[in-house]
Image (tube, rainbow, N blue to C red; front, side, top):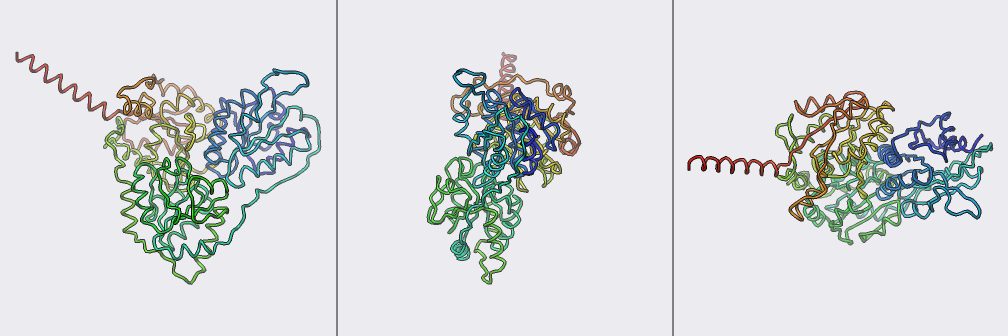
Length: 554
């Protein structure tokens, strides 16, 4: 059995079913082994897209996404995807070809210090030095992806492992974090009159149990951006403060007597750009990572524990308790906080949809999209203005129902990540929503989706600009530069790869419902107009008309 076959075998034993990557000179033997394995191999247009696909796969499933690249250019192209996964706590196992080694020779082909380059972006780099290390290194790398705070891990494999060798089955389970006593936390929860749960994606493995605690004890829930859907956002105890209204969220926190943060990293996005105020005396933090517990916000109590385990254990104790433990919050009070969270959602500066929608507002568009997708589906966003609009107006009803690049904000993410997500959860509807700038970076991944038979809807907001940067330029300088796009014909691009195309001109409800529920790959173009610019044109037209009238009278 060759080294490549042994690597495939151990991946299969670890429960891996899909790998994303490109073949090259240094991994032809591994790809030959993949050909006869049970693993599905997805070959995108480039390694950056492969890294985003592995990211989307992991975000949608909770299982590690596997990325395969050659050293040198394949490695450097994937670095942005590894950085995105590192900042967003996404488990990725990167199987990387090791650069050539030769005694006494410098400047070898594609010879980079990959370990030094990737070290800031991964939890660890494993080097396979001999065939006998394949199973143990792969199993340990897989376990490390998932243990503590999830994240990317690199497994460097030399090309010389092609010789026959005997497999050595070794499987390593992720080491669970300590299970601390929960007596003090339970007492504080039972005694609190106005507690608040602040949860991140770490609780996704116990979302149902979280809901039981919330309903039994009347505790409102706020989530991080990545944790949205941990409690359905239509639920009366969910207070969805993702975009805007940070001061109102701080006022909610100020009105509490206990904040229990579970599986929440408090990164830039998780802490509302660090404008979130959390008084240490009433904050309790629970996380599987000691580094996370020590970062950004001091707490009166920290628990190093697996978040789903803690939530399930708390639920069992709440059910078995003979103490009521119900808070003094009322549904009417929480409804008022929900109203404040949603207040100001409709901004006069937001773009409008051209054709097929009345009123043509963003809130109406996302309401139509919600109904078309249904509560069980998954929306994948890119980086840009459309993401801000989606986070503001789209309601998330299930864990892993919203996937986006949170703390690196790499453009070109949505389309490949949506392909990975759909491959991970084929029974869920998956929709990619991206701007025209993001489509320019990743649009050819439509060929990958079509070739792999992925059923995917891709919605492209076409406003002819890098919309978010243009908005910032106007706000800061009153003019724009370098943000105008000359877009292609989206119909021709879609049809050239065999995808269906629709433009949102007619009835939006019917158009989006048909697009989302149809088989195959479908591109929906949504043309936007700038409301402020539209008003300016009307003012100019009116002034011109008056001037012509005056001149005509003279």
